[in-house]
Every structure is written in structure tokens, then in C-alpha cells.
Length: 147
Image (cartoon, rainbow, N blue to C red; front, side):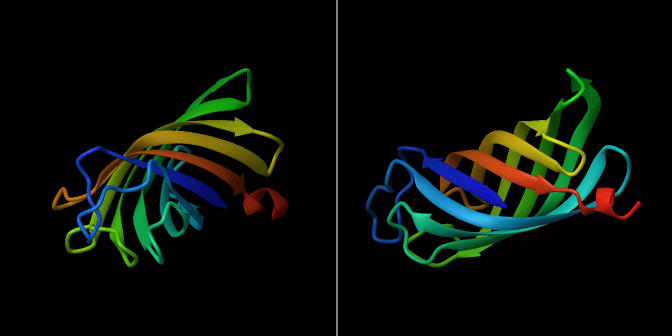
């Protein structure tokens, strides 16, 4: 489960030519599949619930790298890149194609649960919408139950 916040840059304007709220809030889900020990493919969807952007939603597909190195045996680093489609509400995302890059920390809570804290950049491919992003994510690794 994800909680994502976009902090739009000062030059991004919505479909009506007005400035966005200071923060746009989205909630969503992500599924991932391991490709190797450190590499995962992922797909996610998020829906706006705050920030006065109406019924905005996005769907993303990408890749995430999780470092094998763990600080204190439970805190790791991650880096990800996603591309996808978005639309709805008053968001001006050009033709709807978006991409984002993230760096973050993953804190292992127990064998199957972890929290991820990520930050990065999101923008539409045409450049109409640009924002910093912050994301908090609760991860459940079901493979630990099937051993």
C-alpha cells in the first residue's frame, strides 16, 4: 500500500491555467516480482484523494533496485524508475504519459513486512507537470509465508 505526495513546481499549471495546491495526495497499491536477488519489476496504481485535483489517477510500470547492503541488518537503499499513464481531474499531464525516478530507504520490520521511504521527481513527458515526490509504502512479502 502506498501514500504518495506530489509537490508541484511553481511553473506547473492545471488544465484551467491555475496553480496547483502546494501538495497533491494519492493512495494506491503496488505489486512487484523479483527478477534477481536485488532487482524487481513493479506495477502500481494511485488515485488522488487530496489537493483539489478531482479524479486524477495513474498507472505505472517500472524497475526497482534494492541494495544487498543493509545498515544494522535491517535498513537498505533502493532506486527505481517507472513509466506510465495518467489522467483525470484538472491535472495537465500533456498526453497522459508520465515518468518518475526515486531513491529511498527500506526498513525491514520483520520477515515479511517492511516500510519504504522514498523521494524523487515525477513529470509528464511533455513537461507540463513537474513535481518532487515523497512516498511512504508498506510492503508485504508473501514469499516468506510459502517456504
